[in-house]
Image 1 (cartoon, rainbow, N blue to C red):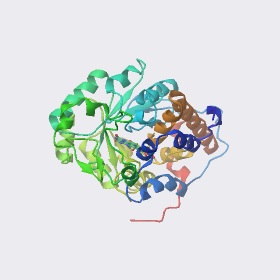
Image 2: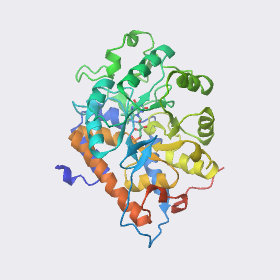
Image 3: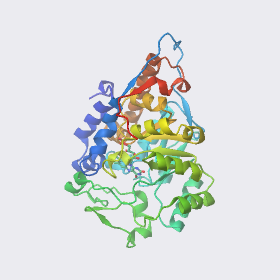
Image 4: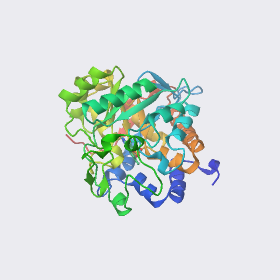
Length: 373
Ligand code: FNR
């Protein structure tokens, strides 16, 4: 269908489902076990309602914000998601160019199918790109960080919720393998790094782990000071799933936390991020004064974004939506979904009586969540 018939992010997803190969589809859409977290990530937004304020001037309405100091036209970024080339030959560069056109920030996956340098080459000179890191051995990771620093990446999102790979049966049923000869798509580093030949490549539920030499012994005591000692880039922890760890992360001195269950692909039944955010806001409002808080998982509407901002998030990430959009329409698809989100966010803000993101407050959201301790 022509792009102007795509009215929302679910329409875009439906087009992608039609054009993607069954393997690509299985990889992008899969989640772990019974996919309860995947389903609930999206559905949990329906447990939060608005408490709109009226008669507030909203003729001028500005949804822009800053993420780690970098301008973003709307409070939305692309979360790092692997292997964009499975869906489109230009892969991650579609997201980079679409992000440039619309003024949003892309977090580049460690397992991107284009090289980190190819992706940076697709960016404009003023465009900020963030880098998502999986920690390997200290020395390999230090090399990687030097590489992305030199290329000009502006922040590191250290993913901590994927120590081992979740049990994704859709992927297994589709005999999904990293080295998909048919399509020739693999993480760029995987083909270009001798370390892949080491014994670190493990079978996980029939799917090869996409990170060999992964450090399974991450710890607050070791890993954060190590990271701080080798880079001055801002550090965000991606994959915080409870209040306790959010507090520990703040104490460890990180710059931000991304509440995420990896789009339901890791531990099934981990709480949807909007629920974690709600509880964090309720119990530890101090956290929001010390670090930037983001969420990702299941965000498909402007109202989802606005709910998260009301509850204290600085911005939200989307993973699959960007993969689907670039698969279906390349760069133009990416531009389309950002424009859709922008329009939906503006409408929601105006109808809530908010003219800037700072006007979005916790008392504008009502939860139907049962009270839990
Ligand atoms: C991911 N995600 C992910 N996260 C990460 O830190 N490194 C990675 O390489 C990947 N790869 C990846 C591939 C695919 C196909 C998906 C769907 C997801 C997780 C991603 O960053 C993000 O947390 C979720 O995608 C957010 O959920 P939604 O927006 O997809 O519902």
